[in-house]
Structure formats: structure tokens, C-alpha cells
Image (cartoon, rainbow over all chains, first blue to last red; front, side, top):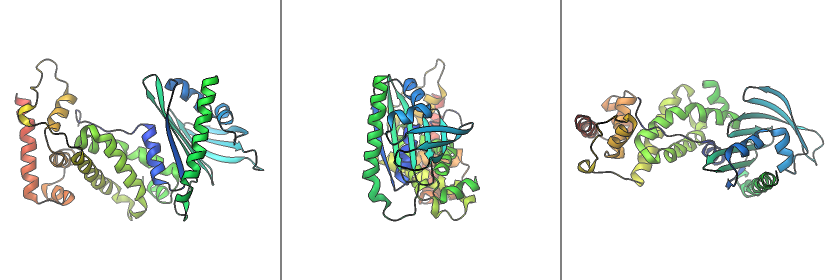
Length: 155
Length: 161
């Protein structure tokens, strides 16, 4: 088999696939003006990064970690109790799913800059009317990417 | 794998992502060989169709056959849309000093049509019979035979050059 051309999907394209398949999510893709290593080392430090770029996260704590699988709890300002997320975290890829919310972050190097995709929304497929929420979650995702851009520029 | 398929069918995003990763080497091999430079795009379209339609897969054990059918058809469709085919007579000679196998195979595949590349993949990588390849590609067995003959002849010419 060696020698045959092989296609691949980098993490940004993988997140694009999920965004196409899940009706109630919004995806934003941008090129960040910072090297990949800097971007991902910041984002992968979830306890530090999430409260820094997302005003809807007061704090985030890692409760358990086993390889690429994490369990975290995050506190939102207007929600009375912490929200528990199952997380898949590896180089260039982070997918966080609670029972009611989904967050995805994916990055790939682009010379001295970084291609970045951010997904927010509802982790369900079957419920009716979910597609109508896509523009709302695109705005939420865009606000988070703005927050990431600001945080990287100021650190 | 069957457990993963069932979790993906229920719509769990973590299972959908895990299934995408599990299928990636297989789909990447099919799409890369057929769609060449457009292989990543063909793979993305294939994955959208596979994960988007996973609930329609009644028997998880049939996963690979189902995925293969989608991947081959998507790769042929996309490659046909963006067709760039170099006529045989314009194909560069094989380098004598230290041939790069990947480049050699890629350049030889580039002179074939997407349909010929699909038949090569099905026959030589996937081990399909000519009748099975014909059924998957929805063409006559005679068409498979002639396309395969031309594809193999292109490889022989290149390797004997």
C-alpha cells in the first residue's frame, strides 16, 4: 500500500465535519496572528484559558484526567451550580460536552500563524428547530474567538 | 467499533468525533488515491455524509462496506468536478536517481481518470472482483475491465520507462 496518496483531515476540518452534522451548533473559523504552539499551549490549559477568554465561565476545574479524557466542572455566572463536562483533549483538539452544551476548539499551524475553529451549541441531533439556533451560536462562538484573540494579544 | 457506532447513532458528539477518527485512515486511503490533490476535500465530504447518515445504518457490522461505497462515490464525484488529467504522452519520465515511490505513484495516478483510479483502488487495494467493482460504481463489468486494463498499462509504462 505504500506510495499511494493518502488524504487526511486536520483538527479544524474535523470540527467542520461535526458542525455540519450537528444541527444546533455554530462554527467560526479564523486565522489567529500567533504561532500554533503559543495558541495551543494557552487553550489546552483549560483552567486558565476558559475563564480568561469566555465571560460565561467564572471558573473551570479539572476533576479527573485519564489520558485524553477529562472530566471538568465549570461555573457560569448566572447558573446556580457548576456544569459537568466530559472532555476530549489532545494536540490541536478539544471537545467538551455536558448534558446540555457543547464546546469545540480546534487548531492547526499555518506558517507562523494558526488556523482556528471554535464551535458552540447544543449536543443533540433529534430535537426539532435546532437549525434555527445556528446563527445565535455562531455569534457566541465569534465572541469567544474575539476573547481568545484579545487574550493572546495582551499576554 | 459496534458500540461506538451505536453511540454515534444516538448522536453523542464525543462518539461522532471518535468514529470520525477511527475511520480516518481507511477513508483517507480511498479518497487520497482517487481524488489526489482534492483528497482532503473528498474525505471531508465523505465524513459529513457518513456521520450525517449514520442513523440510517441498520447493521453496524456493515459499517466498512457502507463507508467504502460513500468514499469511492464522493471521491469520484469531486475529482470529476475538478478534473485535472495529464495526457499520457505529457507525463514526465521517471527519474533514474533515487525514485520517490510516493511521487511515482501519484504522478502515474494523475494521468488516469477518477473512474479508473476508483477501479484500481477497489481491485488492487480493496480486493474487489470486477463484478463487485462494477456494482459499486454502477457501470458494466466490461467497462471495469477496460478501465482497469488502461490503468494497469499506464503503471507498466511508467515503471518500464
